[in-house]
Length: 304
Image 1 (tube, rainbow, N blue to C red):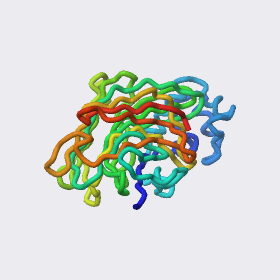
Image 2: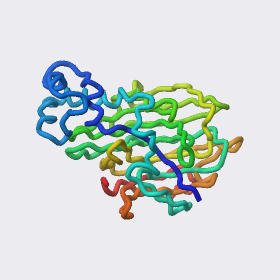
Image 3: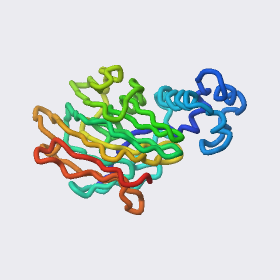
């Protein structure tokens, strides 16, 4: 059986910083950007990089500018995390599916028209380096090269935490960041709704409404053959990034519609997906579904 292609793609921060021209205000970061030619910006772990980002405001500007300026088609080789960079093949099985980047649940079938879920944004423990986690719902992506998805992103950048709301229609439109003030404990509801070739992507942050959005996009080539509820470790040109310790992400009120039939995750053929590395070490473990099939949790186990 063919391997699946799960994906959600962010670029390595240190690699993207030169291309962005460090679009921040004055100070050490702005001065440092003129010191290094494109492609020669020092590694994020170096003393020179730390000196360039000498204040919290400068570090936040660079981190947020990186997310905010992701552009369509700026993808390393167009590869998909899950069957491409630094990943192991997917293994099918309702309770035994493994992925190098996904943890959660996926329904498979055909003609999916709606997927949604709610959650409390988890708190995260950031280390000193760079790590990323994406929490999302979507249509497609599990067994196709297109994906229509939205949710929240947790970015740990040199020890500091940043959280965003976002949406994506791959491959036509890359990650689009909307809200930048998401915080642990925020009440989030995310959904993707399809009508024909039109898709409405929506994330509601009822705690900080400024992060909420609703956008309508079109796709004539999307297959609509799967629906997902996923915690993901994003990746880029250098492979999959470390997964920050987000404790437990608990998704509830999960709903899905396939054709004219509406239900919960367990209403349709579903896979429970465990994130594990190439040696089988578990990085994020999903729980069993609730009795009604509308809730589950993903627990962080290791960063890589």
